Amino acid sequence: MVCPCLEAEDEAVDPLEVKGVGEVGQIGAAAAVADAVHHSTGRRVREAPVTVEDLL
Image (cartoon, rainbow, N blue to C red; front, side, top):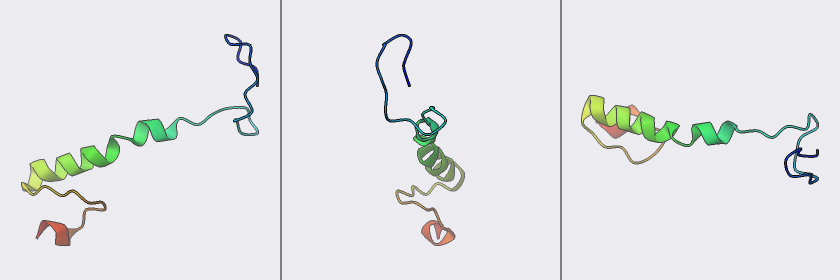
């Protein structure tokens, strides 16, 4: 795939010649869940996954 602004070949693409950006949007998801658990229960959980046993 040739980037029109860089004029360089990029070999790290999938067969559809696109790159995924899904991981970028998931970076803060675990922290947001842990923060919501802390605000609703008052217990700070620092390990994933959060289970009921962690809150008791």
